Length: 148
Image (cartoon, rainbow, N blue to C red; front, side, top):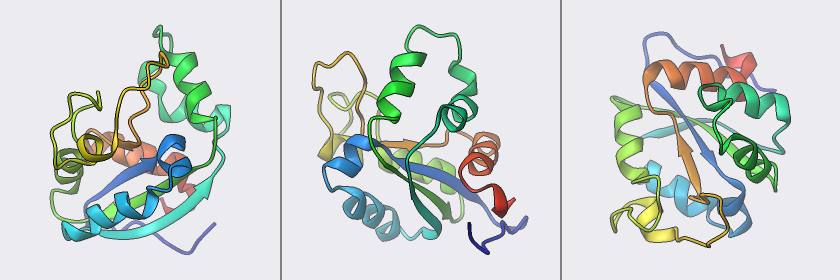
């Protein structure tokens, strides 16, 4: 994997550029927006997600009506996992990402500028960002187990 280790005195979040973002060639633009805000990308990998990865990552959604279609979408192509560091990084990155529904996401956000509804029955919104420090810690362990 890598030599990267989390520093307990720093704040981190996890970002996934989802298969739709990767397929559309938006990975660089998405990560650049995060860097332009002043956050640091401290670990990065391109991966084809497994069932185990996604069942662990989306543990809070298991059993919900959309879970299986979400897993299918997340396995529809490669994704990019990134650990981002910075002060109040979880909250800051969530603000940059924008609303879950890309049609409703404000202009100036990643989803507002690059996302749209494809009427596919799945929310294809380009990017995932952890919603809390505890979620970020758990999710980082899924995608970067050697860092923890």
